[in-house]
Amino acid sequence: MKTLADAFEHTLKDVYYAENALTKALPVVIENVTHAEFKQALKDHLVETKDQIKILNKVFKTIGVEASGVKCDAIDGLIKETEGVIEEAKGTVARNAALAGACQAVEHYEIARYGTLREWAKVLDNAEAHTLLSEILDMEKAANSKLTAIAIDSLNQTKN
Image: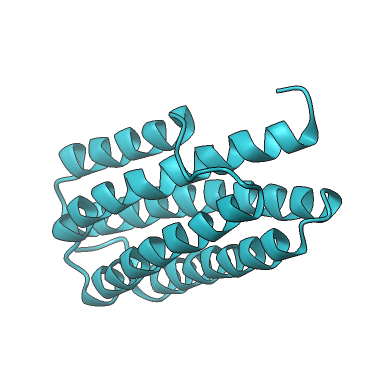
């Protein structure tokens, strides 16, 4: 990478990889969640994630590059950590709360990446990409807020 445009393209490929990896990882998380509202929030976000991939395809078109991903060690690590929670957390309360925390770590990563990409799109005078990335960023922030509310309201407990 030599230019901001190069960094933009590379990071776009990074999040494309991440979103595609999440479409494979989320069903496993959903399967291991027992809290109904949390499970539904994850199902809803899986649908959103698939929509985000479609939006990313449009962002790639704005820079004249075919949509593709590059290995993202960060998302792979977050997914591996989540898999560890599934293996280690035996109690229902612990598992649901820990999975919510793991999911929020993913959301925070995505918020950071999409916020950066959106601002780079602005500097690069790519108004269409800026608008599309703002849409995804808003989705990720809303998902994080929803997870926070569910955790505060019912997942973060001291008793089973």
